[in-house]
Length: 579
Image 1: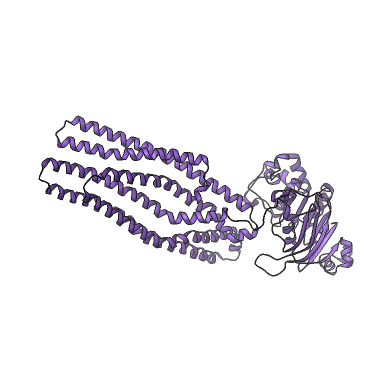
Image 2 (image 1 turned 90 degrees about the horizontal axis):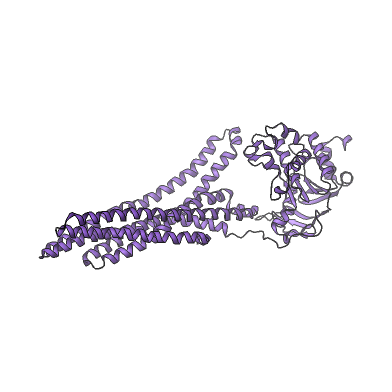
């Protein structure tokens, strides 16, 4: 149940709101009593002073009822807002612990919808439901007790109205449930098409595919529209039935009352019946109002329940990769693969097959090979983005599966193939992560100098305070790549992973950066994935992969002599005189 995520503060606020709701119901039900007193006073020819006093009492009850209602609404809105905030934080924490396999299981579009639209649906429903589910039963029971001693004919009429209204509600909810269950899934589809069209807008325009993308979006949007129209068509009778039943109940009470009054021969009894009819009609409408309020909640329940289940699916989901319990081994910076084989989830094809190598602290490991040979997969496995199918990976002398996730991640700084730039300043992008408070601007400039980015950063307006737009749109590809490399250097982790991170650099910058890395990061282990021989030829250990298997291990010179694949790659990239 989604309410289990409420804390003590929220439950205390809810308890306070219940007190205000009880006060509000009491004040609302006092008003018909004043009406009864006015009726008796007029029938008995009492002076207008009684009518005035009762009128002032009614105004006071109405004003205080509004105040109590506002107070209860404010407190419950606070409860609903706090709940949505906690759900968003819990979803974010859970998603950050997900592996790519977990993300694929839900899809990025669905996770975005669940953390935005679904939580908003739950917030709006809880804000209404907490108040109504408390107020309606109290109002209904209290009003029924008030009219329990009246004529049984009126009670039957009220009961019939309630039964009819309840039957219509249940029928409508039963018929509409399947459509409500589809709404969020269809919103996922709209979100997915929108996201793809925006992120891929340059490709869409380059291929003149605007019409194709628009058609895909229209299909997804039209499916959502048709589903929503089906819901409205089914729900429509409930809107009109509420008004019809209320009006017919009022007419029934007056028609029955007229019959009872005419059947009575005593004038005093007739006056009593007339007064009771006025009061009963007020209380009967209050009873019906209680059920009408419940219809509002029942109407929103199907969609809110679907949203709540989708949120719980994420929060309660068990990550496929289980966290370890240890903080680390005793060999910082050391990496070893022992007969590692790996297949991606859902596939029987081996991406890596019996891969073994070892690199010591302070050494540079380079991984090269044809496209699709498993280079990036090696990096993902050592960081435990996936778990190996067989074999063992040791970082710092300990199996990566034994590490606590945060402890393992703290040993790495990572620069991906595609440069990730965050909205903010240059400083924020370079001095990034949990250890950022431990570093100052001198560390940032040092990282920028090593990554060959200091020159262009100094030319930016504001230097380190220069604003970087979303995804680094105001930077070139080479500038973004150098900022990403600077981020990895600035972290100062014992292992720096550069996953094909030099691809946008010219050869001169590439060489200068490698020279600076070797000179300045001599205490850190560097893992480089590259396509260019010139980028990795100075590495201490070069692993050549071919079809997921190790085709050769050694230095550049050793591989040129003993590994045909490596030699073919080198010859294809450079002239014989330079190798």
